Length: 241
Ligand code: SAH
Image (cartoon, rainbow, N blue to C red):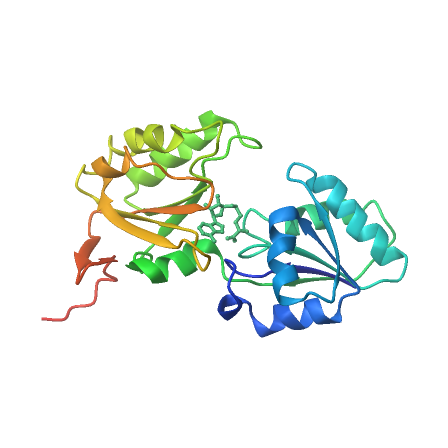
C-alpha cells in the first residue's frame, strides 16, 4: 500500500486522525527534508527517508519501488498532498509499474489553515495561484492572476517568494492593481501552525512592498472583502439587516 499523506501546515492539531493512522501503519515514510523533520517530531520511532527539493520524481519512484518490495509506504507533503503536492505525480508514474494500491489522504491545505487565522477571507469564490515559475511559465501565471482579478475572485497565492524570486509578489500586485482597487483588503500568514506564526492584514497597495518568504500564504480580497473586528472577511452575501 502507498499512502499519499498531507499532514497539514505543521502542528499536530491540524494533522488529521486518518493521516496519523496512515503514518502509524507505514513501514517507511518518504518526503522532502523539511517535511521529514516535522514527521520525526511526532513519530520518532518510524523509519524515515528524506530527499532534497527538486528530487520529486526520484522520491516518488523510490516510494513506489519500496511498495513493490512488499512494504507499506507513506509519502508525505505538508498541507494537502493534492495541492501543489505529489499526489498527481504518483498516479502519473504508477502506470509504468505493476499495479499497486494507492490511497490519497486529504490534509488541511495552507489556504484554509491560514484563512482561519486571518478571519474568513475565502467565504466566496476564490482562486489559488502559485507564483512559482519552476514548472509553470511566468506568462501563464500572469494570465491567471489577471483573469482572476478581472473576475473579482478572492486570490490566494502560494509560493509568493523564494531566495531567487524576491520581487514576484510586487509584480503580481501590480498586475492585480489593473483590476482590483488599491485599497482592497489583503492579508498574509507566515509559518502557519509553526514557530514564528505571524499574520498581517493590509491593503493591496501596502502588500506590494511587503517582504514575504516561501513559508507565507497571501490573500487578496474581492471588491466586497472588508475588515470586521480586526479580521479579513469576505461576505457570502446574506442579508442581515
Ligand atoms: N501542499 C501544500 C502546499 C505546497 S506549496 C499545502 O497544501 O499547503 C508550498 C507553499 O504552500 C508555500 O510557499 C506557502 O505559500 C504555502 N505553505 C505551506 N505550508 C505553509 C505554512 N505552514 N505557513 C504558510 N504557508 C505555507
